[in-house]
Amino acid sequence: MNDVSELVRAAEARLQPAFAHLEEIALKNEKRVLDAFRAEPVSPRHFAPTEGYGYDDLGRDALDRVFARALQTEDALVRPQIANGTHAIFLALSGLLEPRDVIFSATGRPYDTLETAVGLSGSEPNALARFGIEFRMAELQAGEEPFDVDSILAGIQDHPEVKMLYVQRSRGYAWREAISVEKMASLFRQVKAIRPDIIIAVDNCYGEFTEDKEPSAVGADVMMSSLIKNCGGGIAPTGGYVAGRKDLIERISYRITVPGSGREVGSYAASYRPFFEGLFLAPHTVMQCLKTAMLFGEVFGKLGYEVMPAGDRYRADIVQSIRFHEPRELIAFCKAVQHASPVDSDVTPEPWDMPGYADPVIMAAGTFVQGATTELSADGPIRPPFAVYMQGSLTYEHGKLALMEVVEAVLAQREAGEI
Image (cartoon, rainbow, N blue to C red; front, side):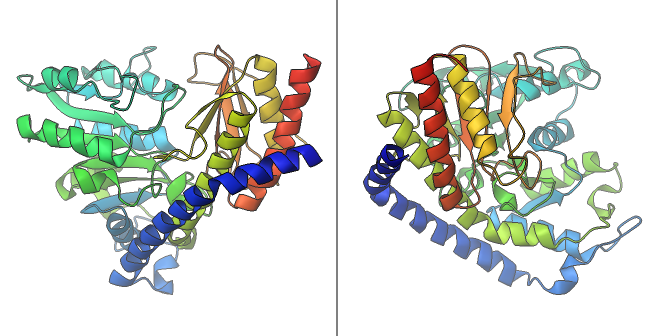
């Protein structure tokens, strides 16, 4: 343990300038969130639960407005009934598109669960492809410029059937870095120059508050994500959001409930307080996640593993990817994360065939909220090149302690050559 402690301490010292930069971003984002709360203004009456139809639900409507301001958008729908990030994305796509419309992805294939939802794999009832909505794409490029701009512009210009440009900010199970707001800004300017009518939609999962502005500030028309990721601050127990242009959010609201009623109905019989409080904590919590991810990246990079991003590299999501030489190292990593968790530390995760995924997946998440990725968690498909995707940590201190256990477990596997 002493050798591991020294390894981690040395990595921390190297990362101090990067940590200072993260604190500056968190301060800017916290001011924007605080200003959003004061602009409404939020009071205890907004936390009260409602029942029945939910007409004149003060808490629900105030939560929408606060989120819209915090995320730099005109409007937002924030609902506990949104089950996860994929649900939020599907809600937006199905609410904005009609038969014979085309989605054009600037970031290649979406991650596994969304492939099923749009109809790229399988033929599930209610998948977008079953309604005649087509999904086209341009693959991402290696290097500093991720977008294949020429292919994207050719794919949307003179193609009026393409109604939406879709961008997946984070990596899913792809070996790539997240797309920064700066990179999005450049693409969005070029897209709007030739197709001002096109809807730019961003899957913002894992990305909120990692930078000092959101994609909506540089031209995204609509963004979607889960509240048990960044925006929930580790407090929100469930839910998701869709945020963007007011006219688009109004249209999506007809999908979240029913045409003609939209956002005017929908009650919540528990308190809204965790959603408000989670948003308030989100900039700080995201900083804890980023510092933890940097430390994991720095340490495993020094141990000779391929990591993405590199430890001190600028980040646009909270995910740290690490490639292992053998699947047993990946499995040992996840088991150690689970053991270092505050909840279900006695549980041993194993690879299994999860619904919506093409390969067996191992997931470690000893979290207070099931599946919350602002809490320390790790997962990865059991397929070459055996990459794990680590994210979260409500506190940097927990992330550091967990890292030391994880390093010992992985090194033991590397040396022993067997589980």
